Length: 88
Image 1 (tube, one colour):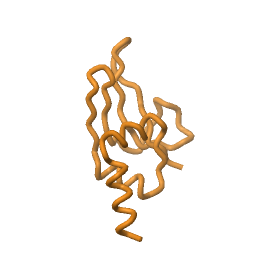
Image 2 (cartoon, helix red, strand yellow):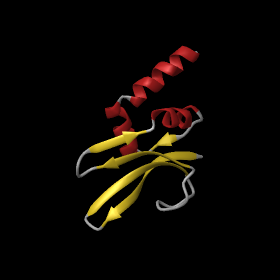
Image 3 (cartoon, rainbow, N blue to C red):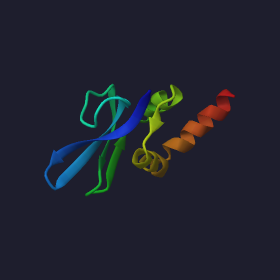
């Protein structure tokens, strides 16, 4: 199973996170399948590779709670739901 989760990067006390698609059995800093975004909680900036995220969501990837909130704020989940209703 694949999850969309945060991978910690940056310095001490200056954490930034990559949003990655990763196998569920891998540890937090383990080898990821693909980097699909970036999140900086200090500057509150987010960069998302929306086509890659939609691809993994369509294939059944489950976002963690934090990634789910980030995607919801960015409007990616709305786009995903619209694509799902078009296909059905």
